[in-house]
Length: 223
Image (cartoon, rainbow, N blue to C red):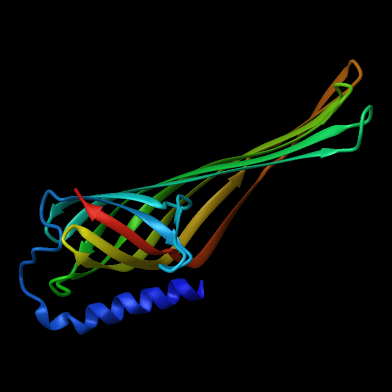
């Protein structure tokens, strides 16, 4: 996190140092009809990794020089599997988590400088997810858990893109996130011998208000 913040400060400082080169038009910044794409980076620029979580891939289409539509896609999947015990009492535990988020919004860009483009805007956010846990015995008995979740919310954000060369930029973004979340009913299925039973546990709703750095440093380019 420290590396991300230091990199963000460096981007802003470099852009501020070049503010005197600002003009009404720019050979670097997007104009009407421009399409851009970007990915989030984790670990700062010295040890960068691509991040596809929480809207980590984003596309933008500029309706005007200073107004863009944006679509963000976040994908997160993980799987952990452990084999416990020895034959004939061996069992396999498998845990899976999958999440998908979609963000659709707009951003207003301000004058900035020839290379620096500052902006503010808002996103609508829709999220889906599922968690499963399976404990399968060597003899065929098992316990299986499954629960789906969903969410809907709004992001209000501000950010900046700095064009390090034509068509390539680094960016940072931060904002306020409001989400309403819902855990759907959980299902627990047990098989012991020839007997299979399923128990449903009621889900729940909730909301949260967080201030987040939405992906820290980003790198993107124009088509």
